[in-house]
Amino acid sequence: MNFLSKFNRIDVLAAIFLLLFAVCYLLFMPFTHAASPQFLISWKAYNYTPSWYQGKNFPIYSTPVEISFELLENDKIVNLSKHEVRWYINNSLFTKGKGLRTISFISKNKAGTNMVIRIAIVAYKGEELNKLIYIPAKSPEVVINSPYLTNIAKIGETYRFKALPFLFNANRLNNLSFDWTVNNQAVFSEEVDENPDILILNVSTSTPAGMQINLSAVVSNILNTVESATENFKLIAK
Image (cartoon, rainbow, N blue to C red; front, side, top):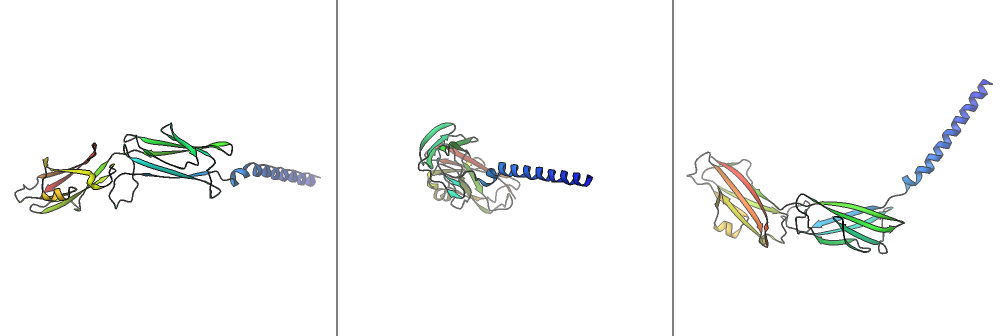
């Protein structure tokens, strides 16, 4: 009798376990098998960087920006031609339209802030789909490219430096001005006139050993002089 009672209890426990498993499976099955729609986002800022640069161009103030998306569901691109798409920039409605998947605009964010883009697809399967994109705004930059491993400038030698501008609102290098100084003295030479992004530095034989040589490059947008960047570089004469 005790054996039968124990056997019955095991059966009851097994039945309860199977019932709980079935309930859990039915409850969670829709969530594990139904794929949520996914936004595939791409954006591009149209400003100047050297041709070899493979990184991402970030916008500065007044940079043209283009952003687009596709909606992916169950590994397929969704046709949104009948759905209204609304675009918001920094919490303000920018534009809207059916199937509107690409927009272009001018960045009005200052350096150090994030441009907040919100995409809203209205009444998609009874609900509104939203996606937030954060695009950081930067400042223009310039880097002095030095091919030398140390900051030592040998007395009597000649050195070549190149200014590399990044993120300026310009189409080409000719839209930018370059001003070089050496120890706070402006540099004027044929080399600078022909190739303003390059500085040829001649370390005179009369230069005292141990003297610090300070180079500075200031790059400005010819069409907007407020848009500028400065880089400094130090050498020690030996």
